[in-house]
Image (cartoon, rainbow, N blue to C red; front, side, top):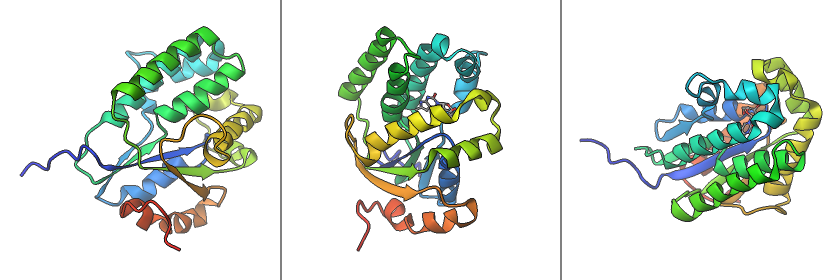
Length: 223
Ligand SMILES: Cc1cc2cn([C@H]3C[C@H](O)[C@@H](CO)O3)c(=O)nc2[nH]1
């Protein structure tokens, strides 16, 4: 019989800096059939009716930040609302990190006008009040800026050629304030902090330790 869409799957957000290993984490959990993995819809950002918004963003971040972040917010909302038959849903980033990490940082650096940021915030607030953005756990892949910078260079994503260590340091700080020090904005769920500096060769061992948490929908690590 048709499996009923599980409208309230145990929803986990995977958050972290550029290059923090989110894709590696998602791939680690992709092998479980109970888990629906939603990677960042980067292909949508690279092709919005033929426009590569991600490419435009890094070509002229001031000019394209609003356009890019508006579309990111829509695509992340679509991911949050996506039905799945799986009992567990793992999302790469979220409408929260869009607003809190990226838009806020761009606003601080005057890469987006305060007027544009205010419009994005109005959308964000309305969405939160009018939709059920159910989140049960946030996994924070905590890294050092230098580590993620080296990985980003090695990954060599075309559009990220112009991303600087300074930018990654600023993004790192905003992730720290939101998810580690918890001094800015709201937290939609408890945060599980993982050491994502670990080398790829041992990182899967580290992630395996948290399978019971993610797969059995436990909210706190058993002592
Ligand atoms: C939610 C969200 C993801 C996201 C990614 N990005 C950028 C950072 C990376 O270079 C690329 C893919 O994550 O897009 C952004 O500027 N704003 C974002 N907001």
